[in-house]
Length: 301
Ligand SMILES: NC(=O)C1=CN([C@@H]2O[C@H](COP(=O)(O)OP(=O)(O)OC[C@H]3O[C@@H](n4cnc5c(N)ncnc54)[C@H](OP(=O)(O)O)[C@@H]3O)[C@@H](O)[C@H]2O)C=CC1
Ligand SMILES: Nc1nc(O)c(N)c(N[C@@H]2O[C@H](COP(=O)(O)O)[C@@H](O)[C@H]2O)n1
Image 1: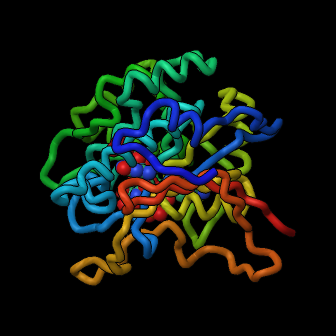
Image 2 (image 1 turned 90 degrees about the horizontal axis):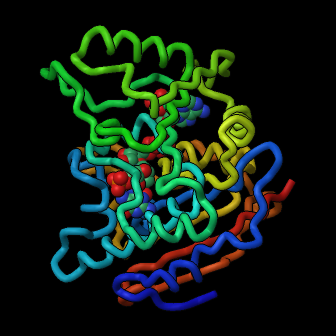
């Protein structure tokens, strides 16, 4: 249960930490885990510029500590390798211009095949009520997106009627091929609920559709805290997977703007009798610095 990770976690260590043997999916939803790297004070993006979050949160460019970020990236990819689909959001694609969410290690794509997955990459799902799934600079006349470049593995955009209307207008305004290719599918939820006046998709319905229509048994939620918190409040996320970066950065950026956190303040209020409890299934330490956690939620009425 407790152990050390190597500088480059070996495939054996990864299987030991993240094995999904004996974990059954459900009939009406996938088995799901969240996947996050955060600071000790819960910050998930320093929000200082549009560089990759790995740079700041996982200490990528700090002298002598870059290996921590490399190991975290490999563990992130390992979560994707064991999944049938990875869920991210419009907000991530607006904030992280380099996000791709594809497994970049050959031993991990091989592992997928060994454990019976039919594809080298999991499906990529984008949840966005608004349809704002690109980072569009004001002066630009075309859309740059690594995520949508050369789409060779399937992407599904989960959006509202309003979001799909927005995507259609973009198609007229920009020199970007919105037919994309046959690997991109848009699923529209047209009976969405209102959340603070903003349309939002009923996540239970979304999960049922992912399970029944797209045959997703294992879902990796690589989204931010806002989505993870909704999953937790609905009791539909089974595991918390978290890398703790050994730094405390404060919840506002240098301009006083709030940073996103893994546990946003909009979370439902619980007490010690009904809070979701965690049982640690795996704890790993790397270089006396970074902690990797894998916990199973126990929901209480
Ligand atoms: N350190 C890490 O491991 C990670 C860091 N991040 C960072 O975190 C930040 C994002 O986190 P956070 O702000 O919490 O946002 P989230 O990534 O949780 O995304 C929130 C967005 O998801 C969409 N959304 C959420 N719920 C619903 C719903 N029920 N129906 C329809 N759409 C929904 C909306 O998109 P829309 O606005 O398009 O309608 C909403 O704005 C980013 O800066 C990202 O870089 C993200 C993931 C991991
Ligand atoms: N757990 C974790 N570790 C990292 O190092 C990360 N960069 C993230 N980020 C999330 O992973 C998705 C994008 O990854 P790529 O940019 O394609 O590598 C996105 O959801 C990030 O926020 N998570």
